[in-house]
Image (cartoon, rainbow, N blue to C red; front, side, top):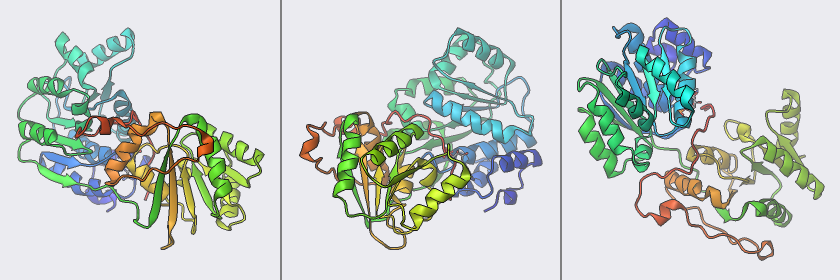
Length: 408
Ligand code: AMP
């Protein structure tokens, strides 16, 4: 569905276009009409699905076309972390660029001067406030936050907020806003504590569930639990022993891409790198070499994880754990295309174990842990937080703000 089909206000449509969005993602398609109708929503959707746009766009449309109160806060978005607050504000800035809608982000950390700035902005009022719970409460306690006219409350990543112990803060904030409001609750997972919260704060909500895509069954997935310093020796060992002819290695950072490629070349492997520091023509040349199978090993940042269609990549190595399940699925989905079988290895260091466990939860299965060759010495055991605290909700891997455009 095209955004033009929603009949958004012209100024909003311009912002959507300049953000480079043309087609609505599935969650946007489902949720936007219901929010426009005024329904409360409980939606399970992960980062990467376009969930932020799904709640921002209809709220913006209502603020632009309805009667909103000046000098008051009209919409409040509560989020667990400053990274998410920054990310949502970034999307808001793009979408509201051609409108009169004002917004402020209020989040923890920061110094005294940012508190003063926030205080001044909150005292004047803003159409939309994006805030972490604790920081907002500090301001509410000072008495100048104008929440009495609030029409829209959005809780984003609600499961994470509860895991972080924000339940009471959320309820305290809700006690200072009108009961007659529209409430939208987004959560990656739906443990019973989220259902209980939903019963308390939502009215006859519509329920939406956008399941994360699953990797194809025929991809053989393996994880290696190692120390950071063992990554390079392990890549080299696996490459030396492998018979794969087309291998794509993903690193989250450009610097790691460059360092690893240098090291592989030094060790005599035919490897090249691809990342955003290269000119377009250089990227195209490397890709051509790799797709025509003249180049067996390509080391890449996530610019290659979505969309690019190269047949018969036999092995994908995740040099580090991707930020979330959606990225993981996209990365390993580069192998096993066109009905061929593929293999995906993921390196998991101690710091990345929680992220890996979160991904396993999202894809609905454990990735088998392979034995690390003895010559690499002792390795850590796999003990992610989620396993240690059995039955908990969606602990986060400390991933915080991941920010990459949704592409299909
Ligand atoms: P989210 O799941 O809300 O964190 O969004 C993930 C990323 O997808 C963000 O970088 C958005 O800017 C981008 N995005 C959201 N909706 C769309 C869309 N309809 N078309 C293209 N990109 C989108």
